[in-house]
Every structure is written in C-alpha cells, then in structure tokens.
Image (cartoon, rainbow, N blue to C red; front, side):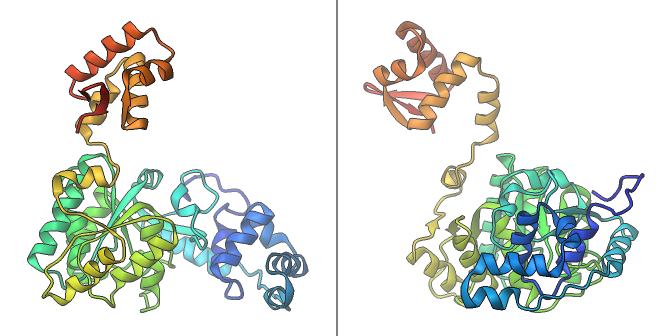
Length: 373
C-alpha cells in the first residue's frame, strides 16, 4: 500500500497511476505493456518508439500499425501525485497491479485495473469471493433471497462482492456482514463518494468491517459509462456470480455477460414469471445459467464447503485428510480404488473410512464410498 513511511524517490504506485490516466492506451494495451516491460515504471521510462513497436508487434498487420501509430504519451506525473494525495487525505490505500496482495482472479481478466483505491481490509482481495448482484428496484422476495444467500456464502468463510447499489446489492452486503464476514463493495464512482447517498450507513459499516473498492480517481463522481466498468471488476474478483433479480436490459445482465466472458460460473435465482424484474434471471436460466433452487444446497452448487465441514476437515489427522481428499476428488469410488490410490495397507484405509463415517464426512453406499452431504 501507500502507507510506508520512508518513500523511495518515485513511489511504486505512481507509474501505475500514470498509465491508468493514459488516454492513448486502452485497458488491454495497459495490461499488455505492463506485463511485456515488467512493470509500469519500465513502461514510463521506455520511449514512445519502443512502446509503439511493442503494440505493433502485439496486433500485427494494419491494426498493429494503427495501435502503435504515432503514440505520444505525456510523462507528466502531477495528476498521479494529486490522486495519491487525495487518497491519503481521506485515509484510503492504493494497491497496484503487480503487488502480491492484488486479487489473483482479477489479474486474470483481459482489462484489469492498474490501480485500486481501497478503504478497509485489503486481505479480502486474496480470497476467491462470490458476487451477488441484482436490480435496484427489488421485490421483497428478491431482497430476502439476496440477504439469505449472502449469509450462507459468508458462513462458508467466503466474502460476498457486490456494487453497493440500493435493492439487491445492499441486501447482499448486509447478509454477508450479518455473519461476521467482510464484504467487498465495488463503486462506480471515486472512493470519496458514497453513491447512492441513501446507503451512507451501509457504506460506513463496510469501510469498518469489510472493504470499499474503486478504480476511479477518489474525487470522481461517476458517469453512466463507469458502471459497466465497475461490473467487470465485481465479476473479475469472483469465482462465481449469482444474479438475484434483473430485467432483460439491466446492469445485472451486463454483469452476467462479463462473468461468462471471464470464464466465471453464472448462477441465477428463478423469479416470478409475471414480474418484469424476473425476466432477465429467468432468461439466464433458459440460456444455461445454474438455477439456485434451494438455500440448503446453494453453497454446494457454488462449490463451497460449509464452515462446519471445513472445521471438521481441519481437525483431521494427515492420514484421514489424505483419504478424505481422494474421496472428495472422485466423489464416489470403490474400496479397492481408494486403497490403490492411497498407498496405505487395506486394513488402515478401511479403519480410516470408518472413522470418517463416524465423523459424518463420508458414507458408504453398498460397495462405494461417497462424500456425505
């Protein structure tokens, strides 16, 4: 972060702030150059000719010549320094793309932010979160579903990501916090603004107990075009995205599309067929999104281990763990197969299976051993 006392001549985050503000480069070009040159500082110090050549090489042909054509980047750092001072003044931290604490999932997307501004707990970024998003004009059923789902996800020790809008997003954040788990709110404005103002109390609570995040300069008020950009970060931070309610043309559907493009699993909560705000989610299910039909199996569907199961697993001996891992990997297997894969004497394996069965972690179905639900 930017809170270290002794500063080097150029703070490590400054060149990333600079490249974020380079209008001549789109987001995918910024990622390409930073990776190609080994960091934003090296991009800053490279000549325009070197950068042009790299972009031409990346695109090839006419498109490449256009990409690299007459590239002129202003090397002035004053705007970057202003953004940094503004963040420090409101108690926000900055994190750049090449820091180890940067979200590994977000780093995989084609157009990740080069800098994140945050207030709250940066360690939440290290965890593969689940996004829960939906319409601002939510029904009481939608609000209930968002809160309950987020609470179940939080019980698995997994943070919930959303966009801090009214309606579904606000309920998702509240459901996560209700279980003592940090939630991540990604803003479509700069971090010094609380939008919408009606969520001021929630915003304060997330700053204290979770993480508020933005890629925009702290003082930016936000434009309509910023919200789809925010949505790609919501899905980018997440291993899976759950859409609770949304019309066919809505921000939630944009998020679902971005999530699918990023290779994330998309889940949807089925809605009432005579409600416009259910039309989008029902269409998603029709098009192949996973339906969430039951709160009790939702976390299984999302591939999350309940906290109880995790605690039990953590308390296992190394031999019990080894057997459990094989059963989990296969889902269902025979005693013979388990003995072969475990490299332990058959008698030991069978007594370990009995112990795991008594602990409620596996069960036997005839000659097969399966993970207990």
